Amino acid sequence: MSISHAILGFLSWKPLTGYELKKIFADALSFHWSGNNNQIYGSLIELHKTGAVSIEVRQQERYPAKKLYTITDRGRAELREWLLTEPELPLLRSLAHIQLAWSECLSGEELDGLLASYERQIADQAIMCRETIRRRGEAPAGGGAPGRSARERLIWDSIDENRAAFYEGELAWARSLRAKLRELP
Amino acid sequence: MSISHAILGFLSWKPLTGYELKKIFADALSFHWSGNNNQIYGSLIELHKTGAVSIEVRQQERYPAKKLYTITDRGRAELREWLLTEPELPLLRSLAHIQLAWSECLSGEELDGLLASYERQIADQAIMCRETIRRRGEAPAGGGAPGRSARERLIWDSIDENRAAFYEGELAWARSLRAKLRELP
DNA sequence: CAAAGCATGTAAGCAGTTACATGATTGT
DNA sequence: ACAATCATGTAACTGCTTACATGCTTTG
Image 1 (tube, rainbow over the protein chains, first blue to last red):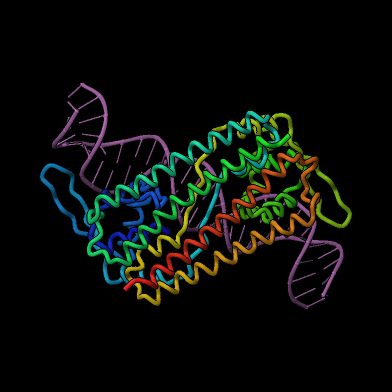
Image 2: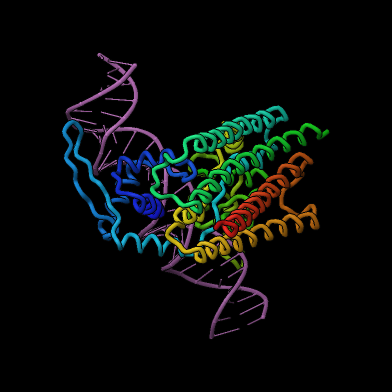
C-alpha cells in the first residue's frame, strides 16, 4: 500500500495515533488521500507486522484507549529505501476531459454549461490552495514538523505551490477553450 | 466502471470489437487507461447486459471469430446523460512529490539525484506529447472519427495541448526547485 | 438533546493492474 | 525458430472508497 510510506514519513517526525494520522491526511490536501479508516488503521497493522513501527497503548481517563505508533530503525530504513527508488510519473486523470471529448453529442449551450461548471469547480480549488498557502505564511512554526530545515520548508512550500499552479493552469486552459469555442462559427 | 462511458463514446463513432477498443485505449494516452483485457471485455459484457450495446458475431476465415459491438439508442441516451452530469475534479497524484516531502532523510546529492531522475522522466513525457501533437498535425483526417466538426477537432487538440502543458509545467517546476535547492547554504 | 470530538476497527465494493490461458497465422 | 498480430476471455491482486459499528465526552 503506497500510503504506508507516507505514514512512515509522518511517524519519522514524531509518534502518532491512527486517529491523528487520519486528521493529518484529511488536512494535507497535497497528499490526495482521503485518510479513511480502512487505509490508515489497516496500514498501521501491516506496518506493525513487518516491524516498521512499534505500538504503545495509552489508557486515558475520559477517552477510549489509544495506540501510539513509533517508527523503528527498520521503519526508518524502509522509508529511506523508498525515497531512493526511481520516482514514478505523476498520474493525471480528468474525467471532465473525457466528457468534453464527446461533447459532439451536446448542443452549444450544453457544452458551454459543462465547461462553465468545470471552470467554477477548478476556480474554487485554486482559491482554496492559495488560501492554504497564505495561512501557512502567517502561522510560521506551527505545522507539526520538528526542527524543519530551510531545505524542507522550501520543498513543502514548492509542493503546495505546484498544486495551486496546477489548478490555475487548468483554469486558464478551460477559460481559453471556452473563449475559442465562442469564436467558432 | 467509468471506462464504459469512454467505450460508449468510441462506439458512438462506429461499431468496434473489443480488440480494436483495446488498441484505441492503449494509443489514446490522454485517456490514461491502459486498455487491459479485463476492463475492456468486462465492460463490454456489462454494457451488453444493460442493453447499451448490441453484439454481432463475425466469423472469419483465417482469424478467430470476432464480436462487433454497436451502440444502441439506449447506449446513446446513457452517454448523453453522463455527458450532462457535473464534471468531477481532476485527480492529480504524484508519488514523487511525496518522496520529496521526506527528502530530509536524504543527503543533498541524493535529493538532487531524485529530482534529476524525476526531471528526466517528465521531460521524456513532454517530448512524447509534443511529438504526438506534431504527427497529428501532419496526418489530418486519419483519426478514426467520422465527420469531425471544427468544434470537435478544437476540443481534442485542446485536450492534447493540456496534457503537454501539464508535463511542461511540471518540468519547469522541478527545474526551478532544483535550482533553488542549489542556491541554499 | 443533538452534534461534534475522541478513538478504534470491519464490511462491502469499485476501479484498475499484471499475468495467465488458448490457438491459428503471418512476418523476420 | 521465434515473435508479433488477431481475438477472446479469466484469475488474482492492489489500492482506494463509502458506509457501518461501538461508545463515552464535551460543546452548543
